[in-house]
Length: 299
Image 1 (cartoon, rainbow, N blue to C red):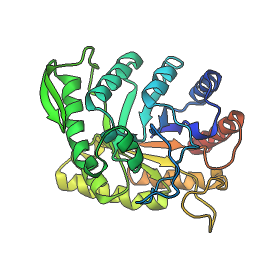
Image 2: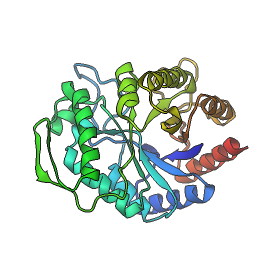
Image 3: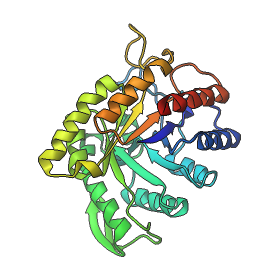
Image 4: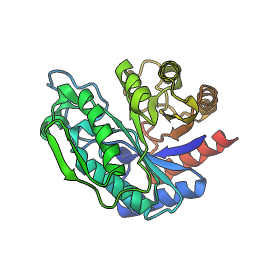
């Protein structure tokens, strides 16, 4: 199983020194890859109709994944990098294809792109994309990304985006792996149908039935489950009565090994440790937790 570490951008001072120390430390610990999420804008939730259900607002900091990973790839020649997830339908397809291709080229094919439909309609409006048709748009985007990464010249459309006999240069040596993410049945079906893998986020109790459903869908489609990736971004469970998105969860080290064993048992191929939402404090505390976590997982 490949072991990853989630970059806790919402809880750290985002400086060059922080990025350098974090990358070199988790590289030395033996983590295989770094994960990050994607938000272009943050917004307050109060007064919104319909209600925004996601956990983040304008106080949570995110670095653009392509910028972040380009920087980190220069700090380590071993670590791999993955999104979980990038909100692809709110971005221009060709620009994402270009940025992902360049990152793959410059990192030596150490980049995996996990995408999903997102939840923040305010971001979509600000980026001039239609929130209500994001699922259908995502299907077309993934097909176009793969063409742009493999064909010299491409003609086609994705919504209002038109490509007329044009192509990327350079292109990656191999197509960037495209995984899907999400929680609902349509996301699972889309992942089984067109994904190279699926990135789940949450508690093992929530994710286990979704992973089993994914395996059913793959079997129904005749896909080889042994080559389909399955990632768990392992969030610390809240204490009883804390609600859905508490930021002061108890530590998870004691219960972590059970989640890892269960994930391995149901076909997990990748697992990412998270250090956020536990009020750990500064970078040194996050790294100390990360080192304890990988030690327990390996043991």
